[in-house]
Every structure is written in structure tokens, then in C-alpha cells.
Image 1 (tube, rainbow, N blue to C red):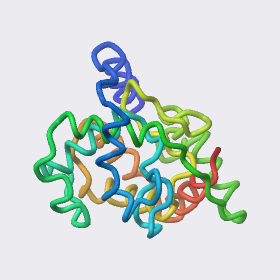
Image 2 (image 1 turned 45 degrees about the vertical axis):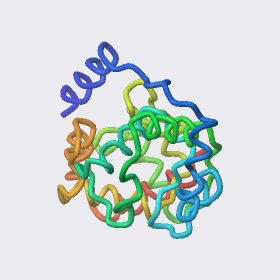
Image 3 (image 1 turned 45 degrees about the horizontal axis):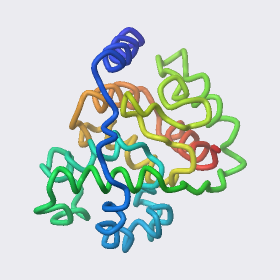
Length: 202
């Protein structure tokens, strides 16, 4: 699995370009509807199961908007929200939300040590790699590779996505294949701990 991850990251570094084609000012005009669920600037969702979409990275955001629009990533709550939007409008939305500040939550003190151990060191016994190796030690992600900024994300949302990767219901691209392999090796307790730790990571 480590070879798979290393090979994919190397390939992305050679071939992928950050989009950078979006106009954040134009995106702001189209972002009003998004803020009904995701909060001002995308940083304060109305439910813990909804993601903060501020500061995640323009390439990641654009890729997810495209996947949601073409239904390769099915999210019932997003049904119809992107219907009729042009590719440029999706790029503009991604550019706008990528520039917004993400707020940081408070991790559960009882889960910090376990969560930090997984995030920074993985679990050698079960073949879980360190989350930090792709998502940065501070949780800032990897923009060119399309790996999202995780630090400060809602713990409930992170846990939901890890379980979706694990059960195969989130499987829409090559990055998802990596996460499906990683999540398959995580226990529920590990998911809870690392999700909580990430939510407080700054």
C-alpha cells in the first residue's frame, strides 16, 4: 500500500496542475446558497455531519463539485444544488471557498493521544499509514495533489467520510481508492480518535 501511495503522489506531482482558473469574486456571488448549509464563508456548517468547505484547497473543491454535479459522488443533501452551473462557475466557487479561513474545533481531550498517534504515525501493525504523510503534519493538505486541508474539519463529518470510504460508498476517483484502502484498516475506535484529533488540529 505504501508503494501505491508513493507512486500515486509521484504521478500527481508530474501530471496534475492546480486549477487556479477560478475567480473568487465571481464565486462569492454564487456562494450565497451554499452558505445556508455551510455557513458564512463555508466555515460554520449548520450540522456537524456537514463539512466546512472553507480553505480546503481549490483543486480538491473543484474536483468534488464536479463529482457531485455529475453524480459520481452522490450526496442527497446536494441534489440539484449544482444543476445548470457551468464549469467556470464551479471553478469560481472553488476559488472563493479555497480563500476562506477554516475555523478550528476543540478535540476531545480523552482522544487526543490516540488520535495524534494515528495521524502522525499510523498503525504499523495493521498497515495504516500516517495521515500526515499526505495531509501535512499541520493538516494543511497538499494542493497540487488535490489532498484537502483537514485541520479544523468537523469530527462528525470526518468520521462519516472515513466510514464511507471503508464501506465503499465513496469511491469516485483515484484519491478515493487510496482512502478506501487506508480506511479498510481502521477500527471504529481509531476513526473516532483520529477524527476528533483532526478537528482540533491547527
